[in-house]
Length: 318
Image (cartoon, rainbow, N blue to C red):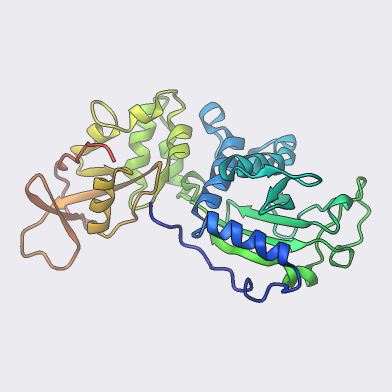
């Protein structure tokens, strides 16, 4: 699995040397997820879980009900615990490296709501923004002087913006796997959803969104069918339908990933696809990356190059 591009924490080395518990939790989390890929995947999947695109067709955070947005923090906490198998805390959400740690999520950076009972404890502060495709996670020891004085009904307070320098960032402004439907051209998105057929919608998605990672939940949202993965594969799926137009749909098989690498396009991570239009080129081609498939050499098509039937992709397992 390829690591997710991310901004490495810059202040871990300067974390409070008088707080060995904080240092121990930082070390445990970084050891469990050095690249941040697991953390980012949990956040991506949690947002998609709330959107529930397969049932609702939604892809935009703004379309969630208020109750769903309020519930998001709890779902993030639950899904992080399931992924990393954190033990239950005694007074807080988790126990990590033997230390009680509370977890707070906010869609708005700095919007973490800290309850009075968290004062004195470590808090894992998590932020993700689907519109910016960025996320962050950091640790801080909650002290009264770090918090804004608010009049929240349940006495919850936020971290003062001037005190955020006290947060030890594990990952800061890291890449959140893209919500393609949210970020694609509106005209293309309208064309994708124009058909009443789930298969036709998927075909249009892979035709219009090329050289970008398309996650499984995007496929689920567009297809809106229980057998959505079948709609991607050959034998009647999008791979078969688009092959005559020269479009390859590269999946997360190791052999497919190597093809993406050789073509110089984004490499699919687990549960992702990348489509690209390919053309056959001669052995003298040197201006663009090439790959040999079906004993012929192929490259990514340039604008204006006429379409030709694409080669078959390897279908063996990972």
